[in-house]
Amino acid sequence: MLAILFYSCGTGKKENSSEPVEQETTDSITLTQPVKDTVPAKEVMIEMNDIPTSKEVHDRLVYFKEKYIVNYKEINPEQLSVFVLDRFTSEKKYKLFLQKNISVKYGVVENIYPVLNIRAYVYVDSAQCANAVNNWFNCFGNDCSSLIPGEDTRIKSTPGYYIINPTSIICLDYLVEHNENNWNDVIAHLKKLFASKTSKLIRVKPQGKLTWEQK
Image (cartoon, rainbow, N blue to C red):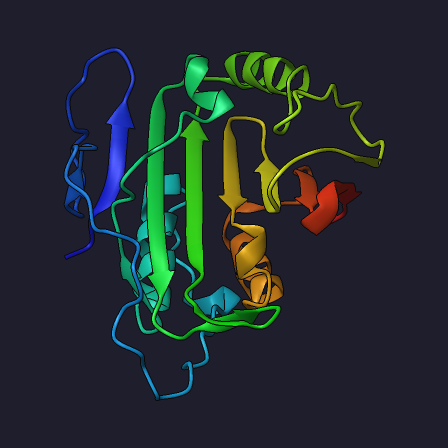
């Protein structure tokens, strides 16, 4: 079942789609260690000629999940924190959480199972998107830092990667304990699916180093 958590602002109704979607509920799957998978992770390939022709964020998120489900399972976190972009008007919101079946290490601690936290926001036009971005940049990260577009800095924040388009924003966040996961591959795939030459790209590494990148 391809169940991406989906929200449509203003109506509270599900959007029509060829793929099933779910609204957020209070039910949860505890983020405990899954049964350890002794099989190595399968390589995930996202080729340009294989990407859906549809540029709809929903359709491409479904495609991303279909590719990554070979190494991950979908979860519903116990406590879903409010992301800053949730506070501003958008046309559609999507949230996808995938926990990996293969563990990584964090220092001397073993059996850490990384979680992909992906949030996507779609806006009715560029003006609505720009308003959300401006408000977000005025309070970015855990310490509510003010960002200047194009200026590298250091903030207090969990690691993440953010793709800002004229009418959509794609956010990847993960815990510093999950840093040994293959995040460079994940980011490369998200860029193939959602970024263009006009996108603004932000990467936050462990210890809060924030850099602006090029497509």
